[in-house]
Amino acid sequence: MGIGHGGYFATCLAARAPRITALITHSPIIDLHAYMVSSADFDPAQMPPEDDIRPQDIGHIPQNVMPARTREMSRKRMLHIERPSFRAIYVPA
Image 1 (tube, one colour):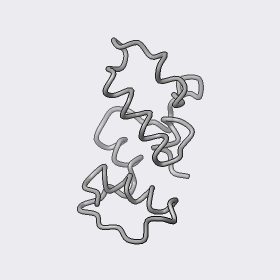
Image 2 (tube, helix red, strand yellow):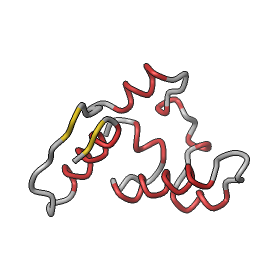
Image 3 (cartoon, one colour):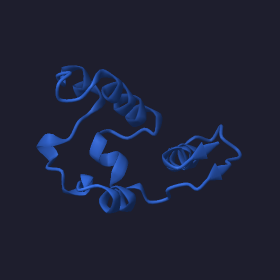
């Protein structure tokens, strides 16, 4: 089950994981890229490739740049939905 952002990630995971045979979402965000662009002053699609973050980069990001909890959530998000980088999570495939 996923709600909001969770609905987006649950849908992405269900689309890629054969073990998931049913999905219930409540107000899912279907296009996270469009949501991010409309709700924040940030467009991950415009992120320069050299600024993109990969799971193996997470441990090298200073605490004052990205708090530990945010680093871990970002790393898990990339791994759970099988995306190679932060930018790839938000840019439509």
